[in-house]
Image (cartoon, rainbow, N blue to C red; front, side):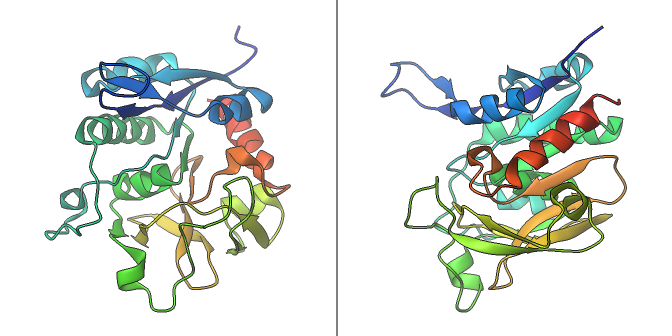
Length: 239
């Protein structure tokens, strides 16, 4: 019997240069260490959409990570692509396939930063392509200070999974995004807002645990951040 639930973690991908002369995968260590500290056994998932169901057969929960790229606007019905949008088609194809598969199985899903945006799209939601062009008087969501420090607060919506998990109505969060969720999707709700009204979290009301946060709780800049991983891993123990 497994003592730790196996948590599939999606990777980022880069083109040749820097680490290798060939294409390579990458992910910050603190994603893995935060999952391990919460009691999970993190394993990396390479990008092969054809293997999504095979991976899901082997894991107990899914973490969709962030990265310096965007979900293709065509996937949520937005015909015009903003000049700031950067795509990683192979990664997005895999992440959509494995996320939709996990949701269909009611497997716990945790989306972080861009992973939260992808979760919203998988649930049928839409995105704001570039916050500065859409939200008047927006905060600096690409915060100038280090990611190990908070960039702004968020208000946690009452009577949500996130509120039950963190036990507070306000958190300090780090911020590293130029896009945001516009609409959360069918059966999904917004669970956190920045002071400028930008969506900072979504969750599905029709799944056991399908939670997305726009910030990076793996940095633990707020005392409640580790509680997100603990609640996720706990949900993965009860499949």
